[in-house]
Image (cartoon, rainbow, N blue to C red):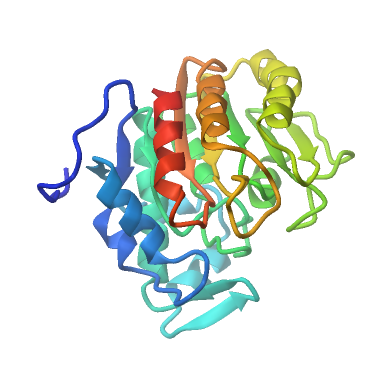
Amino acid sequence: MGAEPARRPARREGAIDVFSHARLAELHPTGHHPERPERLAALLEAFPWQEGRAATEEEILRCHADEHVALVRRIEAPTWLDTDTPVSETTYEAALLAAGTAIEAAGRNGFALVRPPGHHASADRAMGFCLFNNVAIAARAAQAAGAERVAIVDFDVHHGNGTQDIFWDDDSVFFASLHEWPFYPGTGGPREQGETTLNVPMSAGSGDEQYLHAFDHTVAPAVTAFAPDLVLVSAGFDAHEDDPLADMKVTEAGFRVLARRCTSLAPRTAAVLEGGYNLETLTGLVGAALEGFG
């Protein structure tokens, strides 16, 4: 347990445990970029949390190529890995903490509040604010600890292309994504399906009713048929009606119900924060999801 300010609120009844790290609100500064340390600072102020840990390189290498890990490790000055992904000399430390804290949450049925996010990162490429694929690394760690079948449900507004790529040929991990389409990163269209990959593209302007219908009629039956031991949720909140980076209309209540629905899909459920970029609404959305997961 990390040192916690006295003003931190008590754990709410029914909410799952939160895992994070104080350094995630300091490392990997990004200026005025939408994915910035203030996101974590607001969340750490709002919720009680247990301290996560840094992932080992061995844990990262279960999902990422040596060359990619070395590239992130070697960063010594502020630069950009692509047009969306700023990095600096503390990015590698932040990325290890994010991945390791996701592993801890997955192992203890919790919610990892971490940054940088991960679901766009493929085995050999950083992309879309993401360096290491936190949820994928957590899935591999869960399998190493005994979970044979893992399902990943991604309701971030952007398609989790990196997660899909990592597990495309792996029949032990099911990946399901609800996302705005056509939209960044351009993948996840209606014809992009696999044996253990389910993409559910959603039209711009979709809200609670459309999301819950898609979840109940498409995602839930497919994941249930896969019979996972563990469901990991890539919990992005940028499909919210007030998020600045997308065009969806999901409400706080909608995220609460989505989280609750995810818990019905397997004996164990854990979650990892992805997007959500309105600092005025993010804590309320995470709080609603915590209630749903609880």
